[in-house]
Length: 328
Image 1 (cartoon, rainbow, N blue to C red):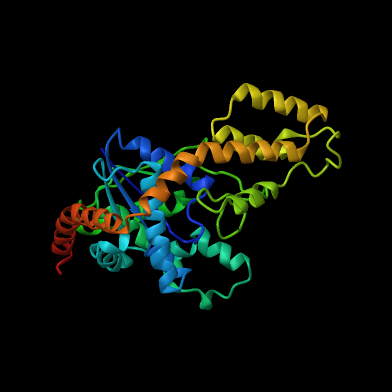
Image 2: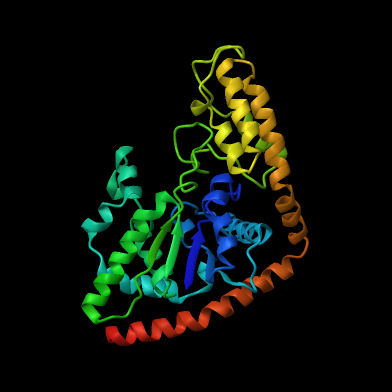
């Protein structure tokens, strides 16, 4: 069973709580269950980041953070997307397997239009995001693609592109199954309204400076009806309780805290202070591991090189066959 998953290094802040519980934590476990292909999707970042230094640094940073979390290059094929030239080559071929109308239904494109952005000003990279994702997936004959809930539409489009190609040229691509972890697939941001996102600034970055992490946690939106710490509150309107569950804080203590919150005997600041303390304790081993890994960037570069060399043979074989069936 081949499992494939990647993440876009689109922020200088690196991976956040939503990335960890929605994708990385599962990827680490999946290394024990099957043949894992895990990658840093840096080509995808080019439709939003135009500073070359930032692209390069973000790519290396997320690569190191993956390693700090426990991605093992000996157990997984761990690589950077841009190191596999067959991926964008395949994207060019797959462009001919999808219509403009299909891509216009993509939620990322529709979200931009909803913000009154002129469609003629959007770059083609954003528009073709699902086609590049299709190339990421189909090139490696993945059986399962675990994704967050927000990426399901992109993977569904990728699968449809694969089916269209197979209908046109004969059975060439394996069509993978989608795996969505419903319990953690959509981690809400600190605003309590939208999915946690680096671009929205409603995230809690795991490897950032402690002051920034503290600032983000103290900015968490809580029950707006609560004016004073002694006012009764609704735990469902305070995302702190959910975050405590996500970092495996004792469930009975959370239940007791929720009861106190309803009774007005615990303040929001006290809960946020507790969350900050537990957050730093939970992620400290990973933070320390990242610091250690950063001491030897030559080793990191070698791991990256070996990862691309490991991924290249299957990518090359796949592309040779794809070109053959297309007549090129």
